[in-house]
Length: 133
Image 1 (cartoon, one colour):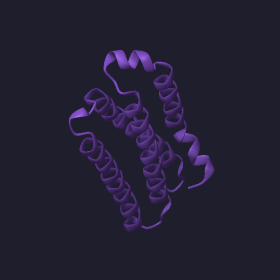
Image 2 (cartoon, helix red, strand yellow):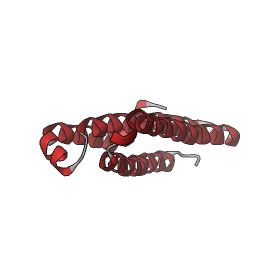
Image 3 (cartoon, one colour):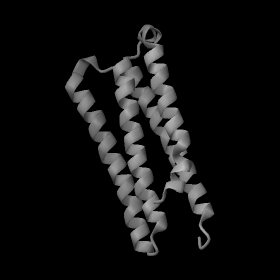
């Protein structure tokens, strides 16, 4: 994937930095609302990283000439996203057992939806630019 395609992923980068800035500046207020600030920050980092990897893999699939290669890249990105995020959530729940911060976990689920919407809209814009699509 070329660098010009990365400009479509900028909204996710802005969301990532804006949210982390908010998590650090509103630390006391988040604590009052029942959120664990570190769970939110680490969850945001993991979600952004996995979304970027998935965006890169799906973008490679859009560039491929073969339909089989396209499906391999797209399904591979879906499977990578599924296993990495499920593994991270499982590790978080198992490591903290009864001290799991449910509000932070549900907020991260919402962030997953947000990053997925941004990723899919960026991929659709990239696909719309293709001349032979």
